[in-house]
Image 1: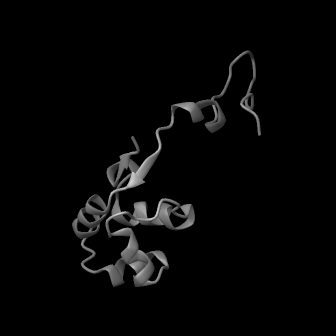
Image 2: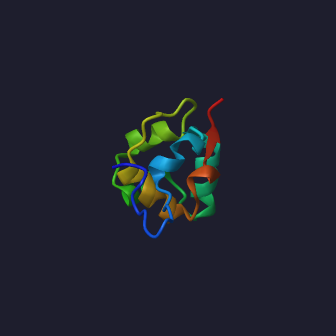
Image 3: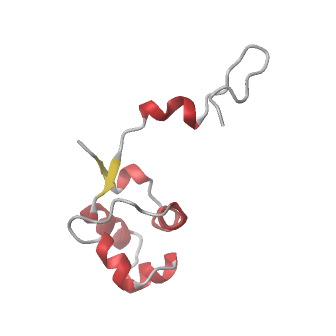
Length: 95
């Protein structure tokens, strides 16, 4: 896929490829994740893990200091929807 997709009538439609240099890398913040989970009324890690299709042990690592950095989009996207937040709400910029 290239960045010129959508060129029509002299107008360029910007794609993810065009703006990749603007994205700031972010890392999951466990404290923000816990706060978002509790605010959504999900009291336990078991409940959250079940809702997003993970084991509690694996999800538990996300709420610990130094969480994994390679988080699968197929799990993160539904989790954000369930929690009613955006990625920026539960993550911090990587310096």
